[in-house]
Image 1 (tube, rainbow, N blue to C red):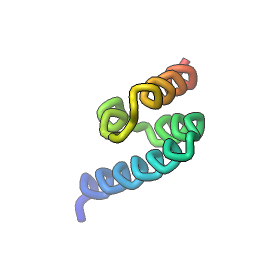
Image 2: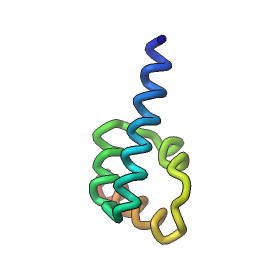
Image 3: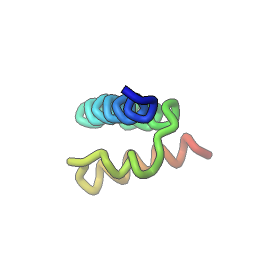
Length: 67
């Protein structure tokens, strides 16, 4: 497996973990995982199944943590 494949798989695993945190309404932890793993906005968009309220909650936590 190439280094690129490893990074992609790692990011997909992290997104799955983030989805689990979001399902448990753990927005703070989910946002911290994004930051700790240097995930981009493109990865943020890949977190599907978020209703509008959850999307805004996660986005606001990411903004708070990035300031």
